[in-house]
Image 1 (cartoon, rainbow over the protein chains, first blue to last red):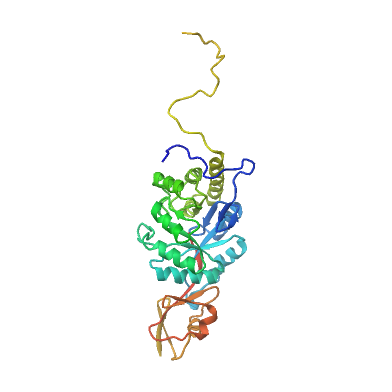
Image 2: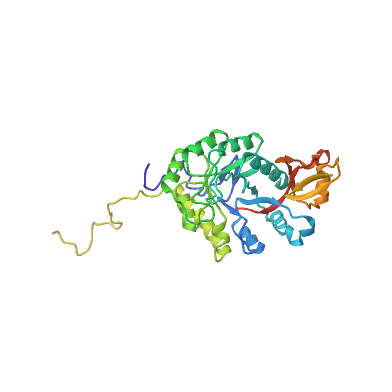
Length: 280
Length: 66
């Protein structure tokens, strides 16, 4: 595998840069997906959404409080989602078994009225690493039930190949564990994955900086999913805009086809006609 | 009486109660969805789903997610 700057996987039309992201046959103008958790306030989340117009907003489901404990604020988030005008991507966060995943996904489909599902099947409560051994079966079962599955997975090529084999039309490998902000921990594996599997890939989890997002987009990944990196930054709205621009810049760079990195310096300015030069 | 749990909280219902009765007793407010013993039950089937003691019901609603 080359360690140099990757060339585009598919021919790119110079007159139409930054082409849409296509998932399960649907086109999306943005290549950024935004999580909705951990923001300082619903208003700040709303501003980030309006400013960046992400492809999806990820959402989840949790136990409702008994009626005696509910407050009027309970529906603020639901009202925000309804007015956002952005496609929703429910997740199965917190699920540890196939049964939990299936039940949660079906409940999400009824509540959010969408077939899209971000499949999360957690294998370890500390690292929040996906259960890679059960993930293909979970994905296959959901696909058979009519879901459009975006599986949260590791950067393992064999796992991703199996997810595609069972019907996933995209995969979402992590850069690093959820919420760590470390950026791509294993660039070699991510780039190997990108070079050997031709399906849309969205880097989900572990990004911390816009430069991380630009980097993976330059490598040819199709999009990114962000939450903590934006929500817990000191200025979430500004950070959301920074990530939005980084994703676009990285994609444009990928489509532009970067130069190959090399060890030998080469002058940019022509040598011929250099003033004061003497033959030695 | 039927002894069941809803979201891991104990509730009692008369014999012959359905999932709809449990939802009403809990006071669930839309939007929400239900599962009975790890099985999703569509809204349209609440009134036709009988309960028995030790049944575990989950009533879940939208929240933020990553």
